[in-house]
Image (cartoon, rainbow, N blue to C red; front, side, top):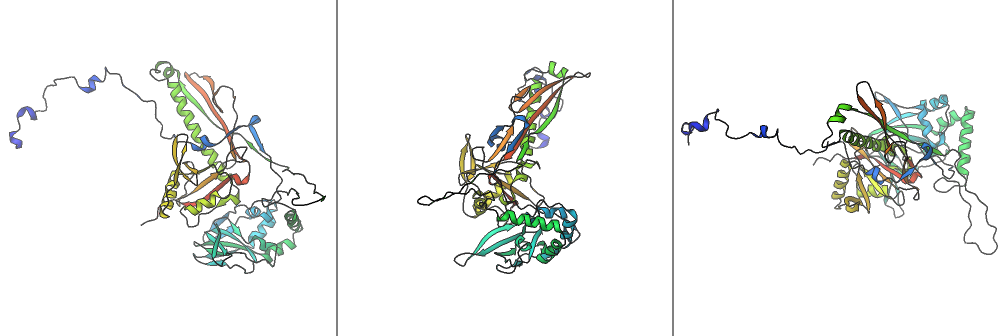
Length: 471
């Protein structure tokens, strides 16, 4: 049919309406509505999986056995063009200089550090060569390897920005490297030689005294974890004299104080009075506010610099992936550093990268049932999503592994229940009054923290590459 043959009744725009329009009909209809939706809500697995412990008095003290050793910290640097300098006070992160606070002496040591640029594939030190200087990694990744019992090369560890190796050279002029260090990427080292350290030490009596005290602590009997040894006797016969012993405690144990997330919820009385059918406006406003507070609570438990998991992992419990993307071997390295690992936490994009790494090896993660929900797992340990774990500009992130519970000497959540005007456990909603503009105010507060009972309860794999490689 051509355009000219279309009947006039079908082309006229002013045809009379023959029935009620849907737009008018909706004025008489009852609309079915949903409750207010919120995209920010996530699964919040961390809040669900942490065992929550009462912190009466707003604080929780972690008592431990006395430790003679101190963990090695992460060192920071400043960059000026192509020149990199170590921040003097950051040298206090070295085990040898931990607790030494003379800024002038630390500045003198920092000034004697020399810069060394390296390229990918460079051998930085050879196994068995003299260890005459400490190496501070300002930027880049290096791999430590050694020779195994049967002659093959074996991997020891991977080090990255802020870490160091060769610290024994500062005290022992005859020390030798026990492994080969090879650069995996281009980067920058700062080195401090034994002779330079000895020169500063010789003219600084209080540095000499600090080093002597450090050496004295190292000579004290201790177990592999650095704890004061408990003298025991086993395998003896007859009336052997048994050793006497006692268990010493830390004199200044760490205390975790409860943190707070708060907001003031405001609702106009006209809204609360007139617009509560079929849904109570105050309840919906409060529900969404609580959801936002719980999301912020989980974010703080991950990222807070005082008690967040990423910042409270012991430096000896932080590892680097072998090649960037996560592999089954990397997950095993993270898993084997503690007994009874309860869960892995990773950003959803990191979990996708884990899946790609497994598939590249011809493996597929198994699944476990967690509260009626099937979640991916490795070696029976669930891998749970947490979008609060940050992703860097370089598309790297972290994977957290933890043991949980007080009885297991793991990671625990802290809160206090029985609050005045408590609405949920550890969360209160307190009426603050009505102002002259007829606005009702409620103070919504939640108190929380997290404590790591033993250093090996929490581990982190850092700098995990999550961006897929181009084909």
